[in-house]
Amino acid sequence: MNKDFRKLSELREWDKNPRSIKEKDFERLKKQIVKLGQYKPVIITPDGEVIGGNMRLKAYKALGMEDVWVSVVTPKDENEKLEYALSDNDRAGFYDSDLLANLMPEYPEFNWGDYAVDLKEPQTLDDLINSLQPIEEDEVPEASDEPAISKLGEVYQLGKWIYCPKCKKRHNLV
Image (tube, rainbow, N blue to C red):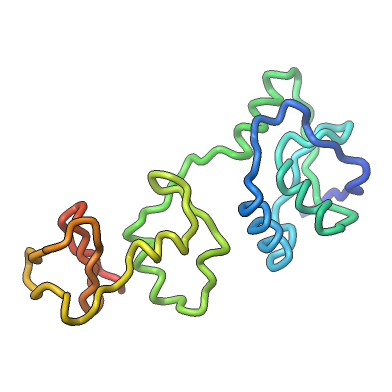
């Protein structure tokens, strides 16, 4: 694959960019870039206007990077420019919370707080883990096909299973 690079000084943010970022998320983004590098291009117009990757552009500048990988597109009008911008940030998929929770025990050293996911509302994976806190052994309901759950609003963990009072189902953690 042929990669096109540009100097950050040649790029400028799109003045109509409808996205923003909170400080804590910006810090998380910078941390990811430091750890993983730039693994996807910033989408720019031929004159250097960034229409996809404005938050990453800010992070690259804050981190003192000089050159970045870009993908140059030529929108035919402002409408198409917006289409590129929205498409670049489209959250077409979502995370299946059960499947994601099943992965967590396999990666005990992984720093889940460095990433956010879209479930019902975007949240960090740390928040998701914290919502799955195990209870003390003396509070665990007796195991059965339909578990007796005595405390609503809490998630009970028994061995490799999590009992969820919201959906009244048990979920395998393995």
